[in-house]
Length: 137
Image (cartoon, rainbow, N blue to C red; front, side):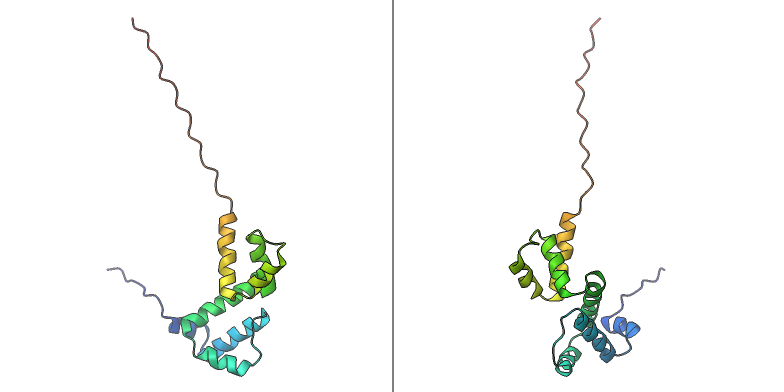
């Protein structure tokens, strides 16, 4: 009988990477602060983040880490989103995009990049040959 591996719960995922929820919250707050999405009062923000579920914290950690490595800041992410959507020259649109949440903006960039990726050229069907006419003997 084959043993099935069960998917880890968000609590176990968090515990494997970050021992306590406080450590994960500190990392998430640090990442969000580095990409320009931090609040002024860190104590209030930390208290709010401690009330968030482990799954949401892990998602925030993944999103903030990806934004930091691929784009560097929210402004650059907003520019990338505007470019991917074909509105790079529209400053008002970029400003509006910069107000979106990091996760929403990152998802917009991902979707826009998927739509732009060139697909493999479709094979054109070969034209059918006209049936050969056999001469009657």
